[in-house]
Amino acid sequence: MTSIRLGLVGVGKIARDQHLPSIAATAGIELVATASRSAGADGVASYRSLGEMLAGTELDAVALCTPPQVRHGMALEALEAGKHVLLEKPPGATLSEIDDLVAASGKTGVTLFATWHSRFSAATEPARRWLEGRTVERAEIVWKEDVRRWHPGQDWIWEPGGLGVFDPGINALSIATRILPEPFFLTGGELDTPENRQAPIAARLAFTDRNGLDLTADFDWRQKGPQTWDITAETSDGGRLHLSEGGKRLVIDGETVVTSEDAEYRDIYEHFVRLVREHRSDVDVSPLRHVADAFMLGRRCRTEPFHDDENAA
Ligand code: NAP
Image (cartoon, rainbow, N blue to C red; front, top):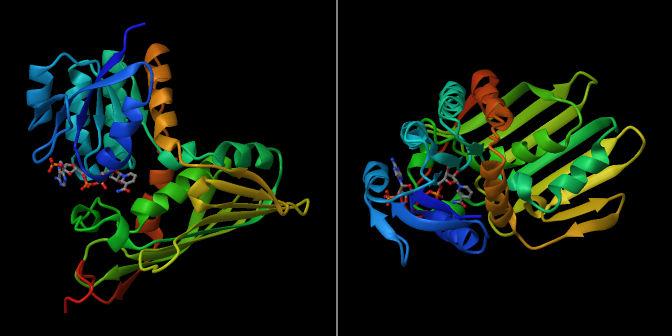
């Protein structure tokens, strides 16, 4: 079977850290070009825009690693050119623009894959299987990291559509929406937004479901030292699940059942190859819907200004 010829757009942090090595390590797909204004990748054609790349190189698929605010226009251009499209998370800046992409991919009959990398963590599927058929009474998400460490100098995350602390928080929500047995919904929240920014630096959210689940989420981008990416769940039969390290580790009733190295993006590209071969798409907007709900229902709290340089006044 011939390899999928892939063009990647937006050679930034996640493209370099994860996409390029994962594509190289995945059978059935090969990188043939990049489109980025200020960077490229060794050994492949490099263009400054998606349009130039589509005109200059024969491609089957495009991976978009740009910020969400510019995703829709690029995805539409690629879909209308008949290319399969892989979207980094979050799949877009609004829910409606993703509906538009789903319609566009249906029209040209190509694959659209809205990735949620945390769903490919080693613990997610075992956690889902264990919780299936159980009633979850209480669950807690604590997702705290240092924005300066993970997003150095990135301005887009603080702009409208950049999501602020929901950029990592949505990873937790992508796991929770996958593993919790019932759909849940927001009942209230608080969003701490720095005076000089458009997007929150911290958020505290409360959710429930039709059975009265008590689910809280605590997102914070000001965490120094060890980083925290934890989800715990307690079930009505007395069981307790603890997923930590963003999904690399899973402890059930005190026993470690998963502990693994990160292979999320390898699995993402294997799944993409499968989707293309089987003429399928995979688009689930539920994590983004919870974030949209938080912006709709959450109480705004102004906090002190945020500067990339900690010593700046
Ligand atoms: P980044 O380092 O800022 O890279 C994004 C790249 O997109 C830039 O280097 C830029 O390359 C290109 N770009 C095109 N239009 C742009 C615009 N209007 N503003 C800024 N850049 C633009 O961001 P990233 O951390 O890789 O994140 C990209 C996406 O991956 C986000 O949706 C993020 O949520 C997701 N993600 C990030 C991480 C992480 O650890 N950072 C982890 C998982 C997922 P040129 O200037 O060369 O065009």
